Length: 284
Ligand SMILES: C[S@@+](CC[C@H](N)C(=O)[O-])C[C@H]1O[C@@H](n2cnc3c(N)ncnc32)[C@H](O)[C@@H]1O
Image (cartoon, rainbow, N blue to C red):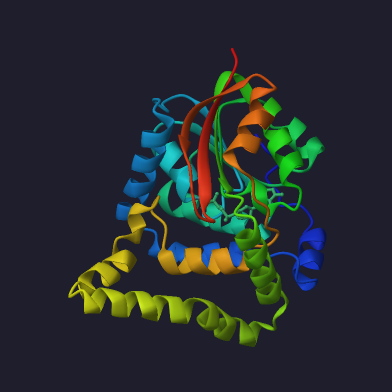
């Protein structure tokens, strides 16, 4: 069981105030109103597909649980779930989703803590499956965070991580945009958001209209929930604001785990700035 109280938010708040950290949890709280059976089903399908194992009776750790959607999906597939997050609003979002869809469930524990905090992690024990999707590159110390996942796995356990691709200059350009977004006053953020995404979206829309396929453009919004049950607009905010931000190549990640007895079992490689998805198995 993880400690169930969120940690003191002082470091977190100081980083937000300094424009160094995005309030992911606030975005997740807003996303919660979109969570329905259809999205939960998408999240379950995606987890099952990538992990390729029966979750029933397995111990499942969700590091950086965000909205809690994937913890819920794992719990509904029969796993005993432990979720934690560093952002107090993400902890609240995960607790809300639990109270709504799995209230009084004793096989799902939620705590507040950081994957960079070794004392916190030492209380968690070991798991059959460690899941950390789009989290470790947002900690401010990605390689330490990646290192800290290793002892959390039981022998033969599975580690499912998603990490932003390293696109060199393009990644550096996005880092600057994220820094600008996070240091803007709240009132100006929507304008910056529109200035970044607006021209691109309009171009895409006109292109599909010109080809007589306007429905294709609108479908890119309506079918987005097939991406792990997520919402396109909240993912766009999350992407533009997402600080801290780091990235890595598949080779660097694979070398980093393989030297310590992990084997890459599955990979979805991203050729743009999005996330690589990797599934490692810890040696038995
Ligand atoms: C982009 S969200 C991903 C949420 C969720 N895993 C998902 O796939 O939807 C990143 C999450 O990582 C959390 N996070 C950032 N730094 C963390 C840390 N040091 N320890 C644990 N969670 C952290 C954020 O608060 C946020 O909820």
